[in-house]
Image (cartoon, protein in one colour):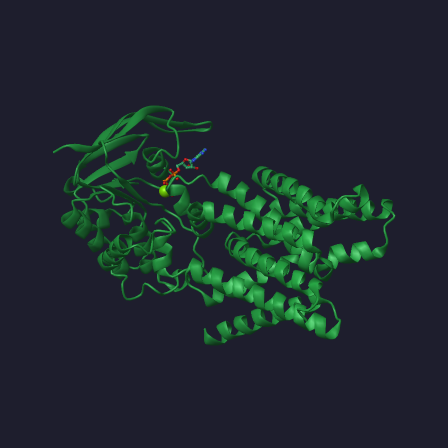
Length: 263
Length: 220
Ligand SMILES: Nc1ncnc2c1ncn2[C@@H]1O[C@H](COP(=O)(O)OP(=O)(O)OP(=O)(O)O)[C@@H](O)[C@H]1O
Ligand SMILES: [Mg+2]
């Protein structure tokens, strides 16, 4: 399998992406941002469609849209009491835009499929480099703000009592989430990127009792999912995304049911 | 004895409500004071002003030079699914990359012992009892090496046993570590049993005195 360059690239890129999404996911879940992960991935879909229309790389279109979208959504949720419905409105707007961009760019449905469902098998050497660099940027920023991010995500009130600037942490975290959504979409597609950002971390909440152990569980489960997914995809020629999602869902359900049974 | 906190001419007005006018008082080092008052008289707002989290309409708040302040807020959002252990929750207040250092670990172990949490330090916060959670909140604040500790309604949701346990612990901090205690409550019997002085917020002003002189029905 590794004698094919495209499989080596796919494994390498997926490994970094799984680590990044596994780490960021722990905070997505702790901050109750799962819903926002969906919205950002829909904004990312519109960005990728726009990129196809404008003739640039989908990854850049996604990054631009999700970063701007993250700032917009952050601003919006500060100003309104009806967070969920206003965020739904934003999602609807961007999905609509995505459909429009795809239609007017006259591209074939192959593009739409790869944006929505992922296309890691097709990633080239340059693509791998971009994804790895972006992953490292996300991880480095996370490490730089880890103390206030931990405190604010796991004890918002205690953090405020210690004069931690949670508005600022909130904005930086939304940007980290936007980048994670953009790179995660390259593996599993924008429709299912929330899987990598929420399921391993949700499972990790049942398995770990410290932030460190939750991160280790979350990253390990994300890695198991993408590695096994790529391998099974290679063996069967079925979509990698399909395998990743059933693996993550199966692990989540298994752990959750064990947890219920023990209660 | 020197004062650790001096409040002068403190006034707080909201757009639609005047909370209090021209309050002045001070807390001596090592004292134990209850801040009493009915619901909505402005106890939490006062604490927020002391901590610099809200700006008063007028007046000043001065802590003694170098005094460190510990604070246990009135509300916390810890639900039953909350994943972190008691120890990890306390450690949120320690620098992430230094919390494995010998010095900080020893400090945390010491605080766990003081707050009687050593045995259950690996229990999840979400599964801890109300009293255990409240002691963990206090332990997290103790990590700041405070000279004065401000507790906002720390006993409000506790059963009588847990109340006594927490108050004994607070008394111990005052005796052993000479920590000044500022204890917000509307439980007069409890304040009478454990505190030495009182501040009573009423009719937009403040009364000050020895706790044994306080009338049981003073709040109403
Ligand atoms: N930012 C604000 N703007 C307007 N009114 C406010 C604001 N903050 C607090 N209040 C009002 O000031 C009053 C005092 O609130 P505070 O929380 O300080 O009372 P409290 O004495 O701590 O009450 P409790 O015993 O219920 O904890 C309340 O009526 C509250 O509605
Ligand atoms: Mg209050």
